[in-house]
Image (cartoon, rainbow, N blue to C red; front, side, top):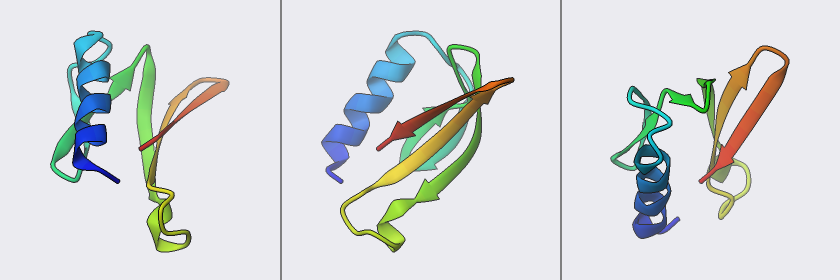
Length: 70
């Protein structure tokens, strides 16, 4: 995963003002603890089992889930 792509995603999430608290640092980039009301719940390193697939950040809201692939 290119660091520039990670930085761009982090800037978009933070720039939209959808979160202020950092939940997860990934390659030195802090990702928000809350995205549109969805709270960070887990992160999965997909690289371990399938190189090139990156990471999945899981966010949840009662009855809903949001996966952000980085």
